[in-house]
Length: 118
Image (cartoon, rainbow, N blue to C red; front, side):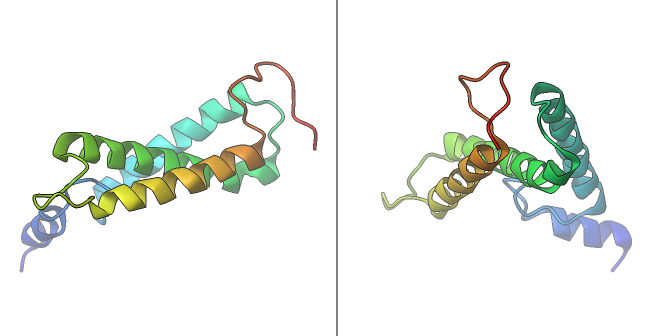
């Protein structure tokens, strides 16, 4: 099997982008995560260097949640037999974890200029 055939097989079943394994797909995801973390640090000046792993995890969940939402919007919430899609439960779990990271990082939609109490 050639390298091009292997890459095609890796990319063919990918529909949502949640399970990307190719090198180019992973590099793109990493760039988006870095960009979001940079924006977070500018918007939330109270974040310390020790918060960076949590910021990265938040950004990853943000991207995965957006992809899952787009897939659910495109294909609907239910399958052909009227049952909820499995991705719906995974989306809910992604958002639950995402909100937990937001709380831990001190992100609050109503707070614009104050740093959180630590």
